[in-house]
Image (cartoon, rainbow, N blue to C red; front, side, top):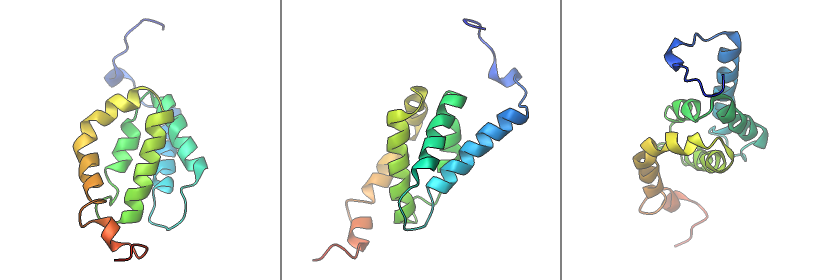
Length: 126
């Protein structure tokens, strides 16, 4: 089907479609969690592979937007780490799909600089 446009709305999901996207969503949720442990690379790798399987970042953003990014600094940090990896190593269209979320990413970045997460840290001595 090289060179033929297929309307994605006319594609009916089958069992493999649901399995792949469900697995990717599960990997993203496992990578970006509330625990104070490093992000497991196997979950990040599964999320990156998922971007190639779906040819974009729709599933990543669907899961990421439901996370408590503004409420928990660990979740926010892990989100930034996973987003960085996905933007660098994921499917090229992930960057396009991420453009609409620039404002949210900028707002999240503001939490780290002025009276945000950095001032809550026990490691920062004043």
